[in-house]
Length: 470
Image (tube, helix red, strand yellow):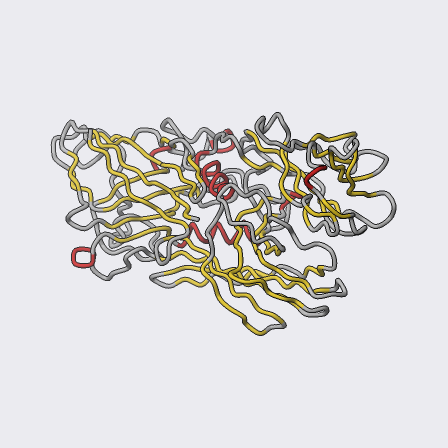
């Protein structure tokens, strides 16, 4: 069986969705940098919202508390149990920290080796430093005592928790990471796709300003928006900042979506302000005005970036039930709230094919863009139709410097005439209400070398590899 697979990128220059950051000190630009793209957790959220199903290893922190280690006699960071372990949290009481299988400690000063991401033994049996929760008042990081030095400076540091596991998209919209904002920290630890937090978030003396998100700007070749946030040093001394990132704050989610290490530390004096402008941009790969001469072109289109901006800018409890959904297996979307919706026909979502290779524009809303009455090849058994199978999602794969998954579909020609395929599209639900709207998220226009024919009686598998590069 013939199999066709094209790639949709995140993190490649001028080739899909990407990230750039402008770093300013006291409103004076210091540098603009190409970022390390989105992390494993962001890609898992895309996978889960596309498939509307289940994925293991997904961060769930809804309703979890972000606690500052206050200087009030009730909080402590200290070596305990005859120098064997480290305790972080309240010295008494209970219910100050939410249960989870991951704990993040950052910004602790004076005692070294405590800042980081810690996991339970149940989650990671091989971790040398498992943590356990005690009465939801504090955590014990086992075996860490001999590795730390110094004494905690009271009032410095934060702790928050989350869970890694299997969580499905339900009526509370848990899997949509909303309310994106920049974060900054001190660590120069190399970026890893599976990072769950900054290496050492800046907390003490950090006056964090409001998040602002620009309008979306779109032309034929690109679509973009900017996430901005200032951070003012009120610690009383100079601080060195070495890492930045993007975090989702919706409903106390605390999900890290992106992380970058700066080429050199930015020194920030008392009273000075560091500002981060993250630009989220999608570019058409191999943009051309003529596919036949310029070659295969395409990528993520405006509607996909529109949804990204919507999620990024929304800090309410709005429920995005089926946003981005592509239906999964079967002929109709398996979503109870859409079962009576006229647009809930599964073949309209996921991978679709067309016969027009006009170059891809960021503003494309359909396949066959020259004809408003045609949106690709329709589902059916007759001539010039293709039988569309259900949308299939391949296993989620991740490594040190990538995260990826496939979206694929089988197409069978039951008619008597061959069908020449010149374009491939990816459709998802572009609505955030209970009204389904099949929207074009990505399109590839194929040159002569990439075009293919589906003969009568033939079945072809066609799909996209969605891949984030770190």
